[in-house]
Image (cartoon, rainbow, N blue to C red; front, side, top):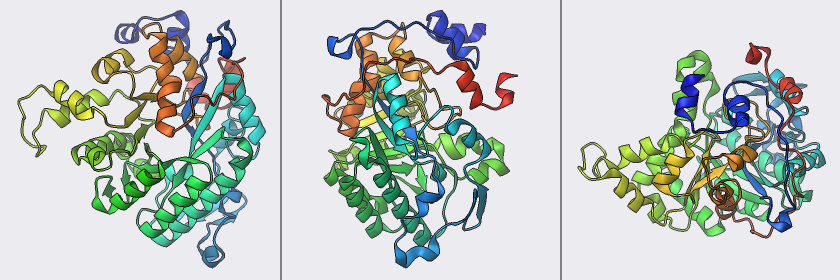
Length: 410
């Protein structure tokens, strides 16, 4: 407890007690004026999720129907992956904590957004964060169905629910076709893992995808995720096989000069926090162009110069050392996402308000993190503010308890 207080910035009792020291969320009084009066800020939640359902696979091209996952109730078989979907924990939090994350109760999801004053959810998949598909043909067919399912289910959200398109990177003509479809049907981004079937994001085979995304004004979003079977076999691999792929992708993109090769393309890095950024920048710029030898230059100055004018955004976590990171790279590259739809180590359902209230951040800077920067990243009109002033700033502890395993309270 004392270590947490030493390391993290001083803050209110709410910050320490409800965010760092326990699983429950303490109530806080909310007093604010209307958004139009400038007393409140709207939010762009740049990392939220859908939980796929059996209906996700109803959109296969008829000629590819034989590639569809085998579904029997809640039992799915995809290649040699056999799983209960959604799993018990997902079922537990799906409706109680995160209404509409299965895209059935769209109005319920938007009501929850309104309660928190959130203008837009940018949505990412769940199943594909955990399972890797071996067959390029099955992958392309599943991505096609996923994109059409999300597009149809969000069509009536009037821009409140935007989504990241799935693209089969090993079948590039299909990937490019999916980008066009996605752009025409409400997508805000392109979803990629840090490694895709063993390919670094700096692999030249990915360049046609980046060029097309740039032409369509669709940013690339690199999200945590990987092969769940690896970490199940070797739990010690979880950090390496999932989380660390995001900073590795940042390194690969930067060292390969992709922001210069695709100067109008925006890049974002999701759900890994931002604490890794100083380390990756230091390792990138204390070395020379080979990456193997010391440059004997000031890596901070080199990093700032290299990032100048680059469209690279990092999704921070609410308890990151935001002051130190902003001192290094400025306030215009950090965004924030709650991980709506999931209840895991990357999830903070009411984190937007926590960031906005951090006593060590100027309010104007905090506003950039929870709203303004994400609008630039995803091309969202600053005047698009459909959410009313928030009436809820925290999910009640008893609701959170419905979505968490019993051992979380031990």
